[in-house]
Length: 92
Image 1 (cartoon, one colour):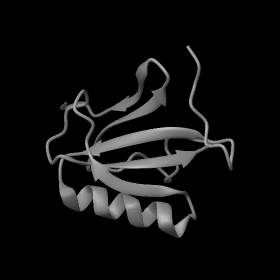
Image 2 (spheres, helix red, strand yellow):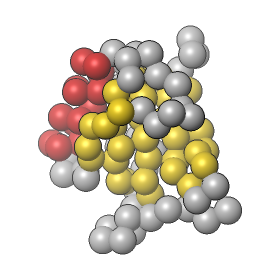
Image 3 (cartoon, helix red, strand yellow):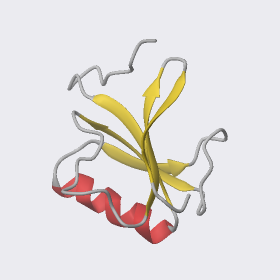
């Protein structure tokens, strides 16, 4: 099982799903402010999401914000053989 790394920054690649589109937009802004490469995109089919929008980001830490965003449903590390759950909200 090999982890995917960003070729430029040697960071891990993560996907965070959200309960609302607003949560995704807010997290994307946090990434932009911290100069973390990130983009909003549709949630991959094999990950569930309440709103259908996720943020794919590259970071040395699974949670590049000060804490897990309240709107976050889950965060997964992208790996060659699928996804490894890093965080899952209690209600999901």
